[in-house]
Length: 434
Length: 93
Ligand SMILES: Cc1cc2nc3c(=O)[nH]c(=O)nc-3n(C[C@H](O)[C@H](O)[C@H](O)COP(=O)(O)OP(=O)(O)OC[C@H]3O[C@@H](n4cnc5c(N)ncnc54)[C@H](O)[C@@H]3O)c2cc1C
Ligand code: SF4
Ligand code: SF4
Image (cartoon, rainbow over all chains, first blue to last red; front, top):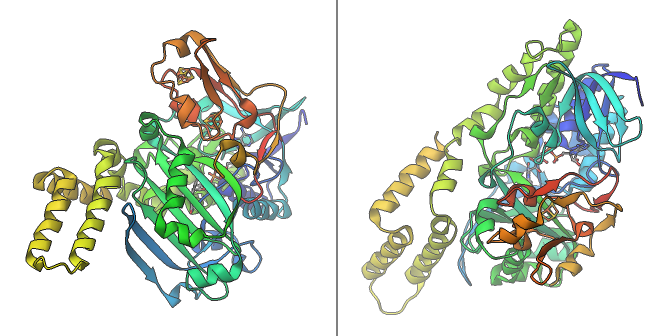
């Protein structure tokens, strides 16, 4: 491999890296797409929602060929009590024409997407870890790999190495993430016959449902998810690492607890676990985003904390940031200027897009989760809401006025009194309207 | 699906001879009050041995999430990826 020079090296064949490699290869640049796994997707998991718009911007009508699971026509939010649930949801036929989002599995999806980059002309190198960035002065000029003679040189390196981003750390643009800037998610893929899925979720054909689960995370800040695939269910739970550190509990026990919840259990009945997996999710939000480019490098996707965890959007921000990086590099290539100034088109594009705007909108969310006792939002409140619903619906001779007082008292107590409830409401409002 | 062994059995591993996870200093582990690596790791890679006064590392079970690198309160774990093509390979993801 020695002495070869490329226009660009992309490290990481996740959605960010493949989007960048595809964009550049299509424009005629010589591109290496490097991945440590046996193939793209070998190391990757997610909950499972792939959004249409941002991928369509890269590959029009991709849904005609991409390996997707189910077209999401309904999204539910469940507030879990110990043996009860308060449900919210929205189902809409309009989500079909064309589909708003699909469920998916990364092993198939990432291989397909990296394959598109290869077809466009990118040279994929698998089973190879980029161990270091090679620099000349203040410029990045290539990557060192764990292969023999494994130095590769390029005009620019796209750092798309995901949440752990050892290369981002080597660049010195972000220190190690703090434990409250990441969540650990564990997941199981549970096989279930197609007819059971259609029946249990009230679906036809290719339709699918997503359910987000709040509560039953042992008072830790976190969310569960339960998504329908073609012939399996993706069930998982992510909790903030700072909270997990404080609890003497194993992550898979939290998942096991969710599986045993009476409302979840019946959806999974008869299912067989086919895979267990775990992964970090960047949850630092706006204030954790590092600088995005420098002399000879750009950084995209999870490596740059570009995740909107409030809406569980990550793959789409990764793809868009990868595309923007690719487009900016194509311009830099045309001008022959790969300096920070030459790559500034990447910053400009991000700043003008939903990526920056959405993360900015929720900029207060991280502090809210950090500063408010997680047992309030993720344990006591879901419980109090369930208890209130139970009491309101139970016909037991107690007057409705008294029940309403009890319900309100329960919710106030959950937050530690009326003042705290107001403060929490205000903080929450600020956090989502930053 | 109760033990971690059952869970890990669902993942394909290609184990390297050399560990990609190294405890920098066992004295630090000895002084560590929480020994939290022994519970937050989703693959039960770490175990504290009271008689030998050491943390053992079953690196061959690691699912490469990165939590221990960030979560060890003493930053006492040197953490890199397994060699290219080694470690875990998912079949669904
Ligand atoms: C449990 C869970 C649920 C999620 N749910 C959703 C969801 O429903 N919808 C959604 O849109 N997003 C979701 N996300 C977030 C989404 O998965 C990520 O935001 C997205 O995958 C980021 O893409 P990426 O390309 O930046 O990083 P990754 O997908 O992590 O890709 C990075 C790639 O780089 C490789 N790599 C890393 N270091 C090196 C190196 N040194 N050398 C070579 N290769 C390297 C890795 O093997 C990997 O393939 C979820 C995440 C998790 C963990
Ligand atoms: S948490 Fe860190 S210091 Fe404590 S026992 Fe584990 S590795 Fe050692
Ligand atoms: S990377 Fe994750 S699975 Fe591997 S040892 Fe660390 S915490 Fe455990």
